Image (cartoon, one colour):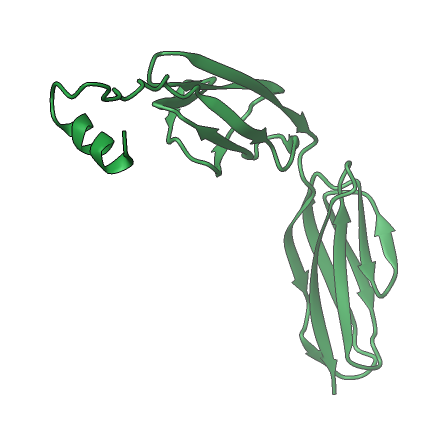
Length: 188
């Protein structure tokens, strides 16, 4: 049977030799990607979990159970209180489910400069300048120049600059992460 006649016969009922469409099996739900850009986060901070799914009627993550949108690529935030294993579940049109796990660890709290104070932003050559700081979760602190190094949540360094100077206050945490601020004192 020629193609044009076969197509016409398929539309008309009762044509001899007309082909019936073959029913398609539903596509299986699939998790195409599941990862965490940072597999461990400091205590009290949110973490990101990124995922991608195909052929999904519904998607959710737990704990706690949270409905998500079906997407080829999407990231969400979770807030683990301790090391937590999250389960991403995808359900297809026919009710078949696929799941995959990802674990987010908890590291030490991030080092952070809370406050940096300076006694003056402009001085005469030889006048005293005091730089003070308050930090959280710091393993060590530096103020450069004058080369102050030490531990502690609070501290100060005093110098008598002879030229305009930029002071850099930096804290380093347990995991080696850093936070820093700088301030410039103009000498006239």
